[in-house]
Length: 94
Image 1 (cartoon, rainbow, N blue to C red):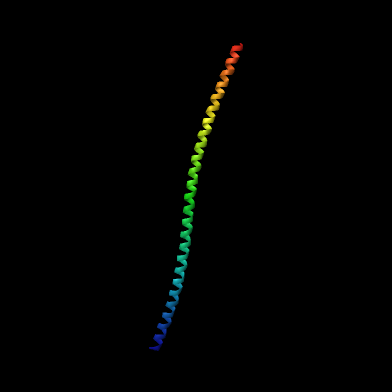
Image 2 (cartoon, rainbow, N blue to C red):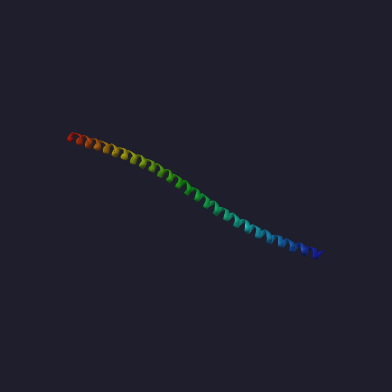
């Protein structure tokens, strides 16, 4: 009977050690999960900021393109008017 008790006691100690190791592993995994969750949160916030900045840059690019086009049209109109004046002056000299 004492031998069976000794076997059971050893087995119980072995199981307790394994339980402790398992709890330590679980705690490490929880900590790693928390760190991963935090990195994900930071990455998502950064993505939101970048998307916002990209939207602002796109809007600014559209505004600049419109302004450039308006300036180009104005310069073309001025060039056309100048050419008409030159043509008119050369016709009058002839």
